[in-house]
Length: 111
Image (cartoon, rainbow, N blue to C red; front, side):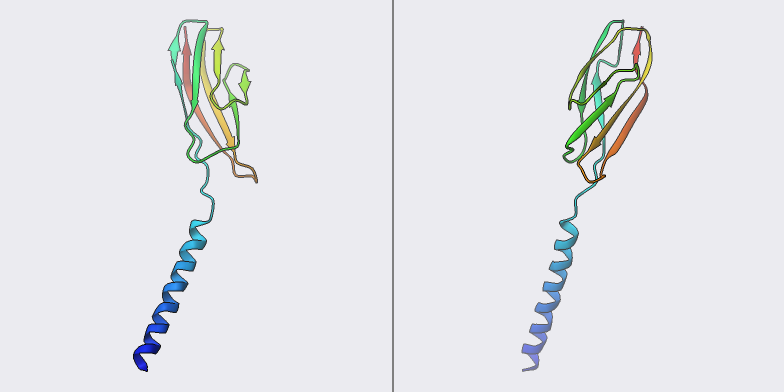
């Protein structure tokens, strides 16, 4: 009888641990905005292809290209008309105020 009680207590403990793990695993992981561009330097007019590299799955994207241009596309192309050094920002969101922004300063260099 004592062994049976110990087995029941052990099973209840395992169920409790699995329940805790399940609760933690069900929480959404935060976005981690990231991106790349190609090319990152060249002569004007410079056409640049941007690629979203955000961890997890955002629902919206907002790019700021540093020259006044912007885009809501996931992987936009942008043309830099004037020489200069430009910072680029990507803001991603998955709803319910769970967004993130990545800014790369002096990222695009146009001669």
